[in-house]
Length: 87
View 1: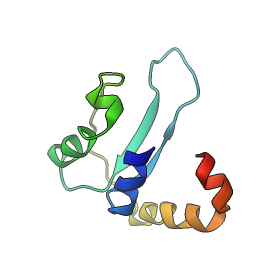
View 2 (view 1 turned 45 degrees about the vertical axis):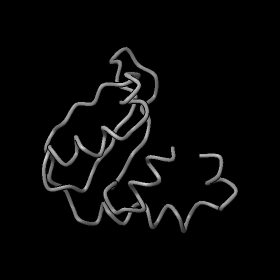
View 3 (view 1 turned 120 degrees about the vertical axis):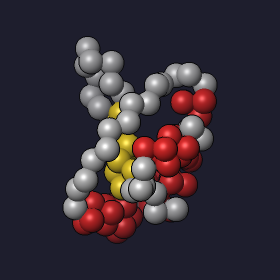
View 4 (view 1 turned 180 degrees about the vertical axis):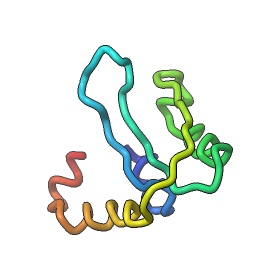
């Protein structure tokens, strides 16, 4: 969680979260606000689950609304501080 919070504070993380258990093997999703796949790889290589080999990242260029970047700020306003600590 510390890496996710760091990326969000740096303005590099638009959205992140886990998927519900399924047979797909996918465990979670990061949508990063970066200029290139190479920049995304550099950021994900700092995540402990990637470093430790617990997860393998896939990279897919995607273009979406700039409003997605407001998600973290809205989350901070909507989630009480005690609940945010449990995240």
